[in-house]
Image (cartoon, rainbow, N blue to C red):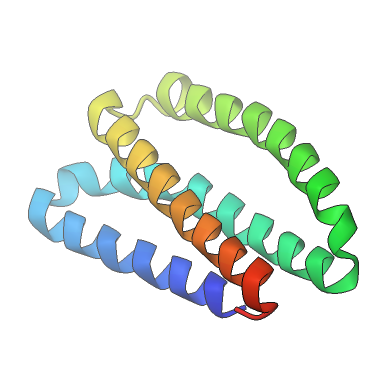
Amino acid sequence: MKAVAWMTAASVASWLAAAMVFGRSASVEILCGMAAPLVVADSTWVMAERTFRRDPRRLTALMMTAFVAKMVFFGAYVAVMLAVLRLRPIPFVLSFTGYFIGLYLMEALYLRRLFTSGTV
């Protein structure tokens, strides 16, 4: 669960810093670009860690299923944010892409640590 706390803290701290730098005008787009990758990365991590602790052999199947679900969810999320809520595309897409890459990098590093030592 430390991984979830670190991913969340890093995301919120970086959003606050970006909001201070870019002002209120971009803070909503940055927050919306952070929200989905953070919730999904945290959720995926919790499921992966629990699965690994119970039966490591089931982790690959879980990750493959989660991958497909995430593709559908992220596609719908981006469409809703841009078409329905009409967020400004540049700050939203930059934020979404940055958080997506950063959070999945953190998750990959936590998975590597989990596989090598059995703890995170």
